[in-house]
Amino acid sequence: MTETANLNVKASVSDEEWQTRVDLAACYRLIAMHGWDDLVFTHISARVPGPDEHFLINAYGLMFEEMTASSLVKVDLNGRKVLDSPYPVNPAGFTIHSAVHEARTDVGCVLHTHTRAGIAVSAQADGLRPLSQNSLFPLISIGYHDYEGVALNEDEKPRLVADLGSNNFLILRNHGLLAVGRSIADAFLGMYLLESACQIQLMAQSSGATLVEVDERILSGIAAQAEEVTKGLGGQLAWPGLLRKLDRRDSSFRD
Image (cartoon, rainbow, N blue to C red; front, side, top):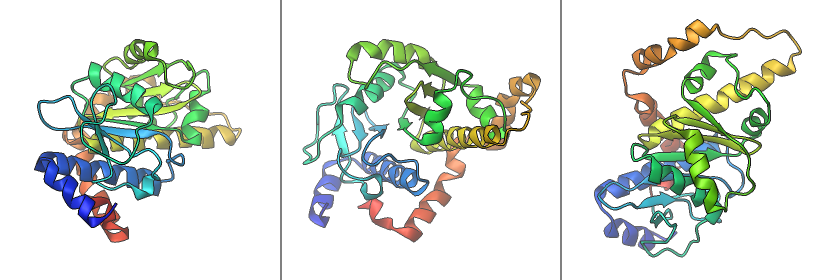
């Protein structure tokens, strides 16, 4: 994306949308930095601030480490571009995201991954188990959705939305992980916790030792503890530091 193209996009959108673009591009870069990307596949979408039902999603074909604020594609709920872009949109990707955004107006960001750890746990009959502190935060707000093939079928949307319900996490059986948040920062923190919980579970299981699960009484009180730890700010506490880390490495996500 050239500097001229960047200026054209920035001049065509509101300041609020541009900030959302910067944060979403940063989120893509962070996913790549943590090794959670899957070549050019999987997606993160964000609701554009304002009265219109418009959303930002990745330019299909760009690596996550290449994503910039100006390369993100703006679409409506049907996946149609509402701002000119030379890049296509992955139809399977937006099927999942549009379903969640349409049903959950409280959701500002939907983050979906195909990590090995996430898929491995999604294939386990018991799913995510309370084996670590990290697992407790997703476990208080999680659903499961059975695999129905590549997500191209519009008929799957109501079942996916019903399985997510009012939760912030969804394990897509034999497929991957999904986290939602009021903000991009919240969605990223949620995925960080869910992904790390899956990795910890697989490492613990691979030891062959007898595993100790967290007592259910502790799990029932974790919501109040989470609120105390984050003071209701969620991912916003970690987000500025993550942006500083990205800037030290490569600030081109802001272009």
